[in-house]
Each structure stands twice: as C-alpha cells, then as structure tokens.
Length: 506
Image (cartoon, rainbow, N blue to C red; front, side, top):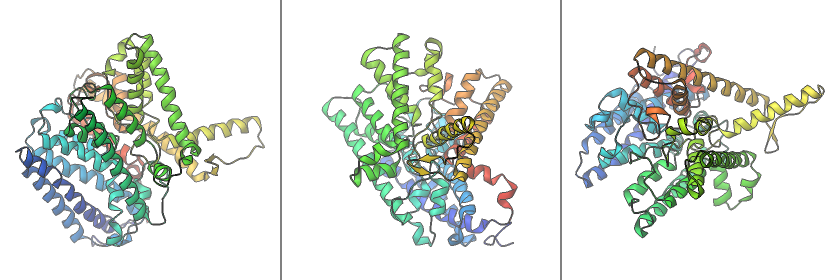
C-alpha cells in the first residue's frame, strides 16, 4: 500500500509527510552552537553532522510521503508524538558525536536529549562543569527551543506548507486548552514566541548586569544566557554542579520571579502586559489559584525550615520561595541540596514531592497536571457535595464564569486518573528494576523519580537529587524514565491514543 494513502482510518502518510517537514525546520537549530564552538576553538562538526542527518531524515520522510495538508486531529497525535521522539533522537546524535564521555552511550544521550527537549532538566551528566562551552550552551538551548514547543514554533510556517495547524496546537499545547489570541493560529504562535523571546532577553540583561556591576561576580554573560535559556522554558539544566546555589541571593530572587512568570499562561500575560489589560490577571481564577498555591507552600516550607534549624530569616524565606517556585513550575533549579531534608525535615521533603503535581498554568511552559485541572476537579467535588446534600441541585462547572463542557470535565478527570496511574506504575517499575540490579533505591526515591520525570520537573531525591545525577540508574530504568518524560511533555493522551485499537480503526 502506498505510504501516502490512508491506512486503517489514519492518514499515516500525511502525518509522516508533516513530520518530515518539521524535522527540516528543526535541523536549523543545530547551527546555533557552531559559532560558539568556533569562538572557543571546540569541535563544530558534530552539530553540523547531526543537523545534516536531521535535515536528510526530514527530507527523506517528506519525499517518500505526501498529503501534509490533510492532517487532522487524529493524525495530529501521531505528528506530535513522532516529532518529539525523533527530535530528541537527532539531538542525541549530536551528543554522541561530540565525544563527551558522559554522553557517549546512545541511551544516556537520548535521555539527556529528551530531558532537554521536554524541559525536564533531569540529567545523567555527573559533572556539567567539564562539558565544552558549546556543548553546554547547546544543551541549554534545547530546553529553550522545546519550551514553547517545536510544534508551536512550526505553526508560524505551517501556512506556507498549506497546513492549518490548529489541530496541532490543540494536540501539543500544555493544559486542556490554549486560548487563541487571534483568529489566525499563525499570529497566535508568532505573538507568543515574541513574548517568550522578549522575556528571555530581559532576563539575560538583568542577570548579566548583576555580573557587570559586581552584585553577583559569578554571573557572567555566558552564565546569564545559559540560565535564561533554562529558566524561561522551566527547564532546569544548569552549568554548575551545585545548580544555582553558588550564585548571589539577588540572582536567585530574579530567577524565582521569572520562573513564576514562565509558569503562568502566556496568552494571559500577553493580554495583561502587551495589550495593557493587567486586570485580566486578577480576574483569572487559574492565575489566582496558581499564585495562592505558591504563597501557601512558601509559607509552610519557610516555617518547616526555620523550625528544623536548617535556615532562618531571609535565607529561610529565600530557600523556601525558590524551591517552591522551581518545583511547582517544573523548572527544577535548586538553591540548596534539599535531598538532605529527608532526614532532618521529612515534612519538607514530602512537600517538595507534593509540589511536583500541581504544575503551572495551562498555556505555560510548565509541565505536570496543570493548575486549571485541579481547579476543575475542585469544582466537580464541590458540585458533588452540593448534590449529596440537595439531590435536586443541578449546576454546570464554571471556570472564569464560563460553563465548562461536560465532555471537558470528564476528559480532565480521566487525564488526572491516567496521570496518577502512570506515575504509580513508573515508580513500581523503577523500584523493581532497582531490586533486579541491586541498586539502593528507597520507595520514596522511586516515587520522586517517577513524579519528577513524568511531570518534567527535573530533580528527585537520593543520588538523583538536585546536586546529583541520574547516571546510577540501570539502562532499563533510564529507558523507563525517558518514556515518562516523553509522555509527560505530550500530556499523555497523544501517546496513549496511539496504543489503542480505536485510534487505528476507521
């Protein structure tokens, strides 16, 4: 059967045709580290070679198939899943070719590439300070590129390919819905990306100015760019073994502020600041809950740290606020080694794991469940309690005074149940595999590792803590966590849909 025709109800040829086109555009990203490598007299050919292979793979897929203009919602699931998987695979090629010993094994390279592109921040690299400067910044850039989404970026060029793109926006955008700013999906993507770029540039200038003025002598321009590329996409990769711990309090506070911004709905931020309608923030129920959860968790964590004697005063507040924002927005930076809290302040460690589940707002660069889903479920629970007391009571679930369609409500509940089920299954598999290879991994550490990779958060506990590495996990566990990162970034549904018979049936 011809590749370009419909196969069992899904136009596989059309999906592959679009994946090929997207990979061609992705290949241009591999040019980014080339001038940096030349400037530091480091090998530049691995990036050119990996980029050429990406372009060749994309061109081959596009040449052997046809019909990208026929891509619909069903094909969109396949496009999104394959683009993230193949994109990570080609980035992994650049790591293997770089000659860096810590990323020489293909599976480790794929884990690192998937972690970057999905903005997770988990790493198998033990000592990031030994990486070449070009490789280090390329690793940071993969997060920034994946932050708003390769698909969203490609939406700006899809009209030239005669593809509408709205179905891909719905398939890839974080959260239940990413509200369009304009009737044109291309204009929406362009405006969100302009805001994303502007905020990144602003963060670079602020951080670099701290270094130039002596406020933070460790924060040079290279470091400022590296951490801005990681903070805005809520990524978590760093260029220091101790994450952001060595940096001045001013830098940590600024990073916390920008992580908070990155965890908010970008469409809402655009309306509030670019269109000068700040009242939109105060009126948005998800944003209010998002900020409320951050403030509440910060206050609780501050009290725990102070009471346990870990820190006090401004340091306690800063450590609590930074860790709260970093984990809830799924960034994964750390201003202190909170892995040690398991012994001295177990309540704080449990709170950190708990913060891996709320996530940021829908339409943000953050991962995990998303605040709006918690909001919907809270409203559903309230309605059920009201109906238990008053059986005749009938009312729709509302968010921002707008009734939520019952199909959406059911989809949210199903997603959360699916998310929790996969999280538990992932933790169990990691624990069983650790037992198989005689790796010292406690149930709490297994739960944290599963939660942090599925939620695209980054650090876990134990040897995989914020100042550690995932290198000690076996190949089987590394593969499991790579899949968890992939599923988490795609919000599970596209991947799970591909595994069902109904997806492939006409």
